[in-house]
Length: 91
Image (cartoon, rainbow, N blue to C red; front, side, top):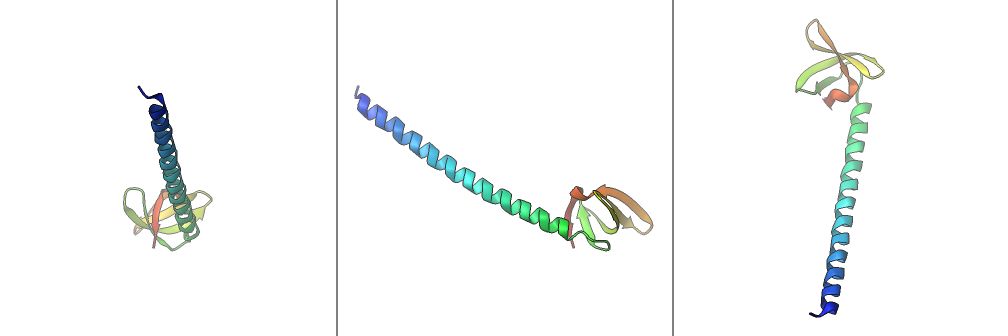
């Protein structure tokens, strides 16, 4: 057996694995940053009177905001309380 060839093959594979791991981590970090920016924009759009869709696809209108709890009118006279982090979209 030629140990030099085996050694250089292992080194080449290790370098390729490091390059792939770096590429995956960079793409993941970029996606996380975009997700955080999108969530920050959504949280800033939460205002009384805004139409929202939350968790299970239920639509409603924001009636009152108290810290992390939001009162949402889902039907005329029906107000429920949800967490502000359950909101998926603000219209």
